[in-house]
Length: 292
Ligand SMILES: [Zn+2]
Image 1 (cartoon, rainbow, N blue to C red):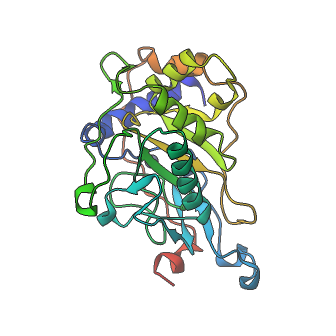
Image 2: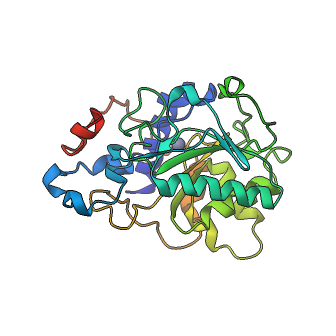
């Protein structure tokens, strides 16, 4: 997709969703897999006896998950927030990723992770806040690493601080520092991670700050919102034959024109945006989403 078109789409998304973002809620995001209207039927799945225990079905923005695992509400180095939403369920790879990231963060004294939404019990579309997070392979982590250990009822909040001066389109250096950058590097170099979405200003700060090995920057993807949390997306697991992957990331560190295009004024007026019809879930998800 040409940069201009992508940018216009982003602006339109921003216009529609900035209310959500400014309220600190999680953005609807990452439309690419919407295009993958899958013809996945129960017959397309592997024979039941050969199914892995957990099965993501469909695409990140239109699917479900069978056999999701629940992230414990707290564990070494992390606490899950907004548990009343019941969105702390995901593929075992996602749960293991969060726990592993928290352990590494603790070992490096980065701080305690506040973990946001993963997926609903069976995945699927959420009533509020996200387009993706439907197959248990997406997880949001807040950038604020200085939260004390809190009782669960005090974790019902989304008012975590933004890392970005949105007017200046640059990070606040006293908020987004080496600990946040290192946490993103740990996430991006985790082997099963496909992409890490951050605000373009955060990607810019990383591009400007990295003096050593820049290869990990490739998986850090600029996207609107994502200024108080980052969004980690895992690859489809091995053997998950009904899971639809996204296109590969373009080569390079992503610090060039693609990133800069986010900071350019729009070249054409955004076209008024009509709400997209909600895609029909894959047929194989109907029973799963009904809890069967
Ligand atoms: Zn997210």
